[in-house]
Length: 249
Image 1 (cartoon, rainbow, N blue to C red):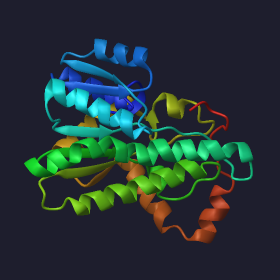
Image 2 (cartoon, rainbow, N blue to C red; image 1 turned 45 degrees about the horizontal axis):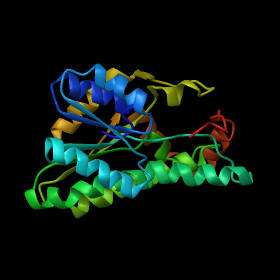
Image 3 (cartoon, rainbow, N blue to C red; image 1 turned 120 degrees about the vertical axis):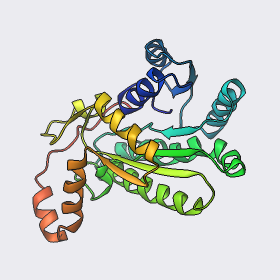
Image 4 (cartoon, one colour; image 1 turned 45 degrees about the vertical axis):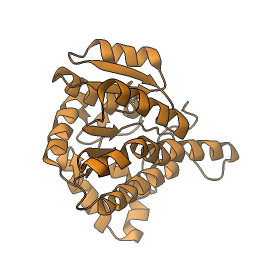
């Protein structure tokens, strides 16, 4: 479980850990990971690594397998968000960091386990995308681009693994009450508690569904946005609220 120190990752860790699962909690903040681990009923292993570092992710995967054996489920939940504007040179590094974590971090999370999963013909890979990947949102070019890329990457991976016995599940959260969303200075329709969202996501994972939006109401919103003509979308969303820039990542 990457991104396990807070937000959706921590909520999913609590859900599986309280059910007695052996959980690998991966993130960059050791103290926060330890706090999550302390609240679990099942056995937990804290793994400190940056998902954007492929070598660190390989090492973390090897440590987990050495202790617990191959995982049944790998969840790439690590993600960051910040307001970005292309015209600001200082936002270039922010663009790169968001894409590195939200897209390449997912690749780095799955790669160490994939060959063994193919060989055994079992396992589930879960990627946390977002409804923000449906259309490009103003002031969130990096985040929207990263989540659109996550959708397509997970779809490609699912097709590549078709018939192998390895399942790929794409989860697209709407607004979930996490530290990432609490700084948003605009209304968030259908805002959902993170633990409630985790329970619903776990049901999707158990069912092996290809894709699900949580909460489902945001799936309806996403469909409407997808159908909306470009000219209308531009006029409406040009006035939309924007996430603050200069957020530490």
